[in-house]
Image (cartoon, rainbow, N blue to C red):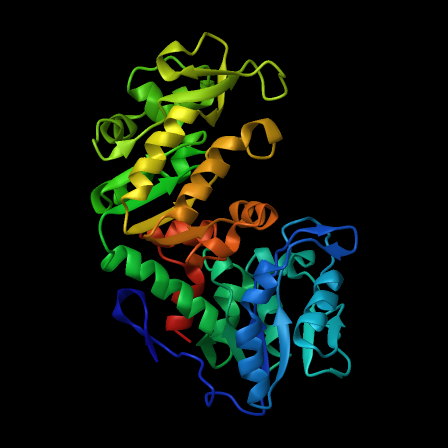
Length: 381
């Protein structure tokens, strides 16, 4: 058993928990796929210890997963997983008609191809439950989703939290409950309204909160900066103004600006000198130095979200520089976010962080103090 949120006990998987059973395992293998080839397998590799632990107990496994791209098949994932574990991985095209499960490890097709998954349909969950006689949720990355395989299925079978899921919770609990100080949080990305609760919590918890990306715009506007971002202007509420007044919140002091993301004429200006009609698409070099100084003195660092529009090469420099500053730091570093992880893998930086979380939205929700439907379901299983 493991102590979960709210002090309720959750059954935890161990080497002796399940033996010679058919086990359904919820994994998160929402990885980048180009054509029929997996181009980044971090999330697949993260589940290998759990898969090997269950196989060691003589169990047969049916892996349940989704992909966020509409209609994307998981067949390439099955092939990559087969190479990683060194044995054939069967591919279950239709979990409603499984036929003979002929391999020790089977991967079911993308669950989001069936309406019942995202609708949290009980009938769909019952159909999945017929594939096994025990359930392990190892997919922290989708713990914030109220889906059939995460929130309903655990109520239908003896259910356990997987090692990866439990490890992720323990890592975030360490930051929330007993961080070594100074604690520096770095948050980026878009849509401030989805991260306001998170920023408020870390304003109270952290020693410094470094904010970049689009979410910084509304805070800068609240401090009186003229920025051409109509959406950010609408996000300036009383709560945002109160947050902007905090001395712990550190905002960009310069930025890479342009009239549009596709404009080749890019300038670096101090925040006070940004001209009418110019948008901020990356943090500037002075901001990088400011952030790097705070990071360099930290003993605990947590980072989620890009600090610029990293999908465009011209606006990656700031995020890359901050990533390297975190990698150089002597403090313990934790990073999460699906896009951020894929980007760090591509840059060869992922292995330089102490802990790389598979979670993006789930990580943010847990850090913000929100209940995770998948974790709640495991408490009641």
